[in-house]
Length: 273
Length: 263
Image (cartoon, rainbow over all chains, first blue to last red):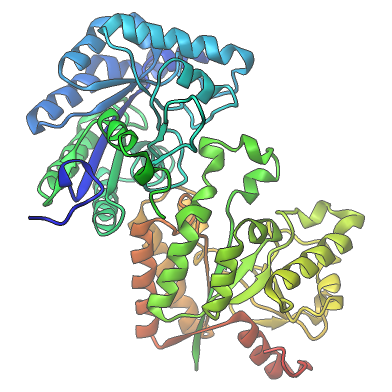
């Protein structure tokens, strides 16, 4: 029998694939239409999301989709299809707001929460900041709405729980690595080839396998800086196939990982102690 | 020609962001620097132990105060601790305050370490006309902030009589490449290109690393990259020196009067 591990089912390595569906709501939030050169997000709606649903179906991978409220409102059937396929829908802003929302923030978090819950019949329990920003109001609002995890912190390579608060259910931080396991920066800023991004991900996988064991890959199914287009989607599929061939690797949804950590607070409050 | 690589580490955590945003508002993308405290710096220290390399760590007081245990580990491992200012100052705009800032950075770091630093690197890369003269008055033996040469040179002409400049290489700075979100192999290729050529030119190369995950090498995959690079440099005949030793040797070569004990 394999040695016990910190992961569900004795896995050696866990893989969480998160699909950040930054659709045309992002342009709308910036006061732009989604036409012509501004139709990057429409690519996700027309092509990208279904390309990934097909891929995950082929590979048998459960994934987490971070979705924007206004996109769900506009294309409910697409988002119901994601849910019906067994993937997790988690919240990612109403219009992918990458700026300080001030006092309007709680109402917007609540609005998106309601839209997702009403559309697919299941309330989200996870959230990821659209731009990595948070305010003092963010987590208290999410916790009041029943969220169990946030995936916006970039300060560790292991999940951890927030410090215990009397009368509050525990809350998990599932960090995301926007540096080298996120397609967007390397394509949009680093001008990398898909083959180079694939190589970077494989090196990350190897190093993480030898160490912390938490692989969290971020995919954007859009055109422009994302991995929606065929050349880059092929690199994602090659990576996932490579990962699946590794012994002891298990793919799971973020909320499954969050539940696992929340079930053992003593182990996950400070996982490095 | 002897070949020497100076491995230098700029110990940056949340300090760069905290210079403009209150620390308790550093969430998500603005709190990325906590990676240094939680795991990045420990990984860099462990890697240097594994590679048997003594390095020079440039510590801003802001960061030293936030990770005392890691600072102690750094000293216990035999690394050099040098000054990286107080809290990410732009030395061009400090004006009258510059003396006080550098004095405080100096005395506080001295108190935390038990010995006085002899080297300085400008925390945001900028210096005023007065920075070097102030450092000289405080007893510093070298600065390592400039990008204007391939080898150490005397700072006499910049108001630092007896001091030495240990220039840095942008091509051998992790943040130059990772800041542009280059893939790891591209960053590695850029570092190799610069490193090989510098060693072949004057036998001097200054490597600059950061323990952060974004701009630096704190991530596990990147730690394996720098260990490959260390081995490569060894294969090219390079040794690894502390900055204070390199500065003392350069000073002797230039005929500067380096007080005994400075190395």
